[in-house]
Amino acid sequence: MAGITTQNGFFYKPNYGAFGETEKNLFDAALDNTDGIIKIVKDKTEGTVGGNIPRYTTDEIQAIVDAGTSSDVRVVFNTTRNALEMWVGFAFAKVL
Image (cartoon, rainbow, N blue to C red):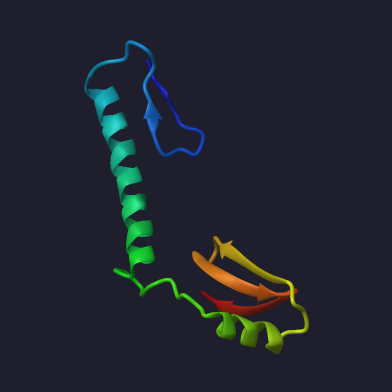
C-alpha cells in the first residue's frame, strides 16, 4: 500500500490503513528531509550560514536604482544560484 507525497514533495502521505516498517521509514524520511530544508532556510535568514540576508536602507536601494536606467526594481529568487537578486529594469543589480 504505497502512499503519495504532498504536492511539493515535502511530506509522505501513507494510504489509509497503511502500517509497517516500510511505511514508517518513508514517513520518517520525508519528515527528516523537510526538517533539513527548514533548517537551511532558518540558518540563511538568521545568518548562521553564509551571512545574514542583507537589509538595505532606502538610500542604498535608491543608489542601486539610480545606477540603472529604470525605476522598475524587482527582487527575485534565482533557483540556479539559490539566492535573492535585485534587478533594475532588465539589468542585474545585486545579489541580496
